[in-house]
Amino acid sequence: MKKTDILTPIGITLGIIMISFGIISSSGNFDGFLAFIQISSMVIVIGGLTAALLINFNLDQVKIMGRVVKESFNKNDHNLEDLISLFERLSERARREGLLALEGELEDVDDPFIKKGVLLAIDGIEPEVIQDIMSAEITAMEDRHSKGRMIIERAGDYAPAWGMIGTLIGLVLMLNDLNDPTTLGPQMAVALLTTFYGSVLANLVFMPMAGKLETKTDEEVFTKQIIVEGVIGVQSGQNPRILKEKLSAFLSDDMRKRRSVENEDAVEGIANEAS
Image 1 (tube, rainbow, N blue to C red):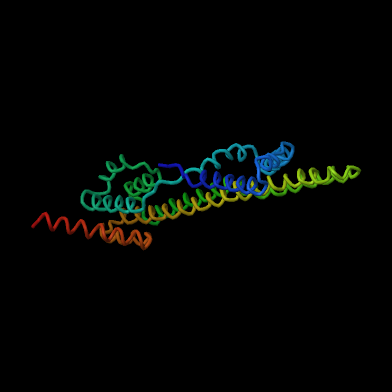
Image 2 (image 1 turned 30 degrees about the vertical axis):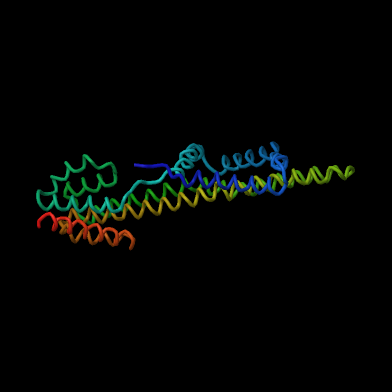
């Protein structure tokens, strides 16, 4: 299940607000902000950027750009502690009732990767084969994510370049009209705006989005590695407590401390009820 990652829109909005505040506070009035709005400069940067992406990538890759951008606004809702508890429960039931009994447990599991792994275990596939199959799927996922992320990274590379191209166009036009010195300042300002637009798009939108997507991929790979270890542990009949401790090694120190405190509280509660 995926939830909205509010940090992405907050970051972009905050960046726009800070840039706008800097412009208005430096100019002393709102007219200074309006001076940064230049349609022709926007057309050069956005149009050139779009053209470069169409040349660089095939149609199928361009089509998924919207989906890739949307993915940077989502976050994976994987709770590692719940994941460990799930495999502890699966291990207990598998040891008590056999692997076939796990089919009933899968009805409440939404993650297809977990379902696939457990079904392979139920089918009696050897642990080494299960690990090979699931590791191959992780590698394929990384490759897909890398290809999807590449179009955003390229956009981050091309945006400043097209900003510079727009600036060169403006400078050439300005140099062709040196007879009127009063127009040099405004024309120079317009020429520099394309570099401004390209830099903002690259450093506030595209490159941070690509970084967010790379982080999300690393987190998903990490989670899937825990799932692989959990499936292998269940399939090989590991003791639930041993499997729990093994998977807990993936947790951060803070998570382990919190989990330890919760377990101590639960034991204390049981002891109080018994007395």
